[in-house]
Each structure stands twice: as structure tokens, then as C-alpha cells.
Image (cartoon, rainbow over all chains, first blue to last red; front, side, top):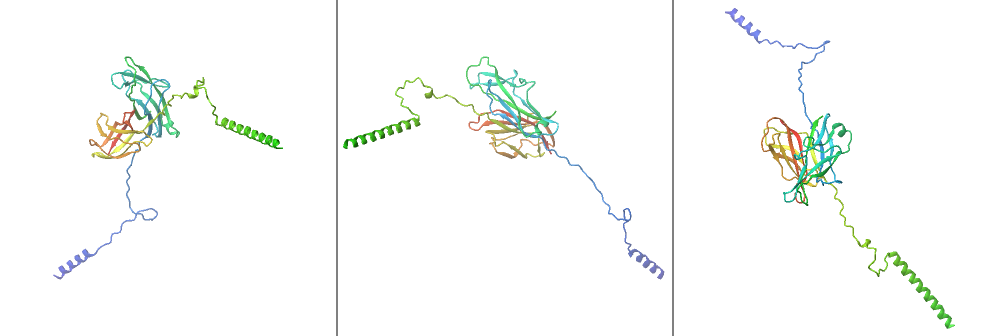
Length: 171
Length: 160
């Protein structure tokens, strides 16, 4: 009995004895450094290109009159250009103007220094990032609206509107 | 003796009259007006008024162009910055279309210098990039709201 009790006491004593655990140190030249982990993730963001396009409020037809489209305040990504097109040319490549009664129409061709616009080639103005960002000045294109179709039209004032499309696209 | 005095006074009076006449004539010459008794003068050019109306300075409309805008997917309320530049003399009505010509937003008349910072879309957008969208600027005169030239800006909508 005494032996049994003493054996139990020894076992209890052994269980209550705690041993301090020491972490193995890591480092070179006997210097200690803590363990660490790192991870990385990429962030990406985009600031879109922008500019201000000036279009004429109204365009008067005929020789001697002209309109201007201008581009200013440009912040254009490298490799991109600003392209301005006229998007409401009719099947006869003209802008249709109507009289006040809307029963007579005339057609106006849009001419730049280089060409007359057509539905297939309706680019009015094009400037790339190198031109737009190399200077603070405003760049633009001058054009004329000339009456080329007036069959059946009577005297009076004819009006219409031009629709411009602005795209900033790669070149 | 009296006679000498009379002659003397007469001489002075005549001199004074001559001086007065010279002064009057010189003043009239300074005014540049001459009596014109004959109204049938052949010189009628000065009476004619040139009937001339100077050409109005051509006005332009400034359109803000951008290649893309960010929007929140899955909600109708969006934060944007649609505006009418303060230099313009016209109202804007701004519309936003997807590439299939679906209208997702249309504004009221926007006055010059006015910004729209929050909009409500007509439909929610799913998460992704919508390319070849159009921001359409319809322009109207300030006085009688006559439609003026307008512009479309092609852009992408980045819905996240």
C-alpha cells in the first residue's frame, strides 16, 4: 500500500512539473530575428484621357463663312488621338437644312482645307497625344459649309444642325 | 479840340468793332459750322448713314470629352461630374446611352457653370466594362431654347 501511494505521488509530482519551452532562435552570426511572413498584391487604377472640344454654335453657309472645331485642355494617354467626326451626313454626303415650313430642304457639303467630308470619310479633325501635350495652345480645324443641293428650294432661311462625334482612340 | 476827341473816339470804336468781328469769325471757324443757305448741295454723302451690320462674333460651345467614367454596379444612384462649362452660352441636355442605344440617363436643362454630381440611372449596371457608350450633348440657346449644334462623346463605363 505504501509503495502504491508513493508511486502515485511521484506520478502526480511529475505531472505538475512544467517545463519552459524556449523557441529556437534564428539568424546568422548568432543574431536573433523574429519570424515574419509577407504577401503582396497589385493595385491598378486608371485615369481616363480627357480634353475640351469646342464646336461652333452655328455655322453660316457660303463662301467667306467658316466654322472651327478646337481641342484644348488635353490630357491624352500616350498612343491615343482625339478624332472628331461629323455623324449626321445624309446619303448625299451633305447636312440637310430645312425651311421654316419644313417642306423644302437644301444640302450643305462640309469642306476642310484637305477634303470634302463623306459618310465613308467623315473625319473632320484628328490630333494625337504628341501634338496635344507638347504645347498648351489650342489646336483645331477650320471648315466651310457650302450649299451644294438646292433643287426645288425656294427663297427663305434654311436651318439645320451638325452632330459631332468625339472619340479618343489608339492610333 | 472837341473834334480831335471825336475822331479819337471814333477811331477806338472802329478798332474795337474790327477786333470783335475778328473774334466772332475765328470762333465760328473753330466750331466748324458754316452757314448753309443752300440745301441743295451736291455734297450729300455726309447726310447718308451707312447701313451696315457687323458680323456677330462666332460663338462656340465647349464640350467636355472623356474616354471613360466609373460607376457603381448594382445600384441606380451614381456619383458623376456632368457639367456645362461656364464659357458656354447655351443649355445642355446630357444623355447617356449604352452601345446598343439603350438610354440609361437623361438630364434636364443644365445652365452654364452648372454641375450635376449625382444622377439616377434608368437601369442598374452589372459589374464590368461597357464599351462604345455615348454621352450625348444636345445644346439649346439660352433665349428661346432653339436647338444648336450638338456632340456625342464616345466613352466606356467602368462599373465596379
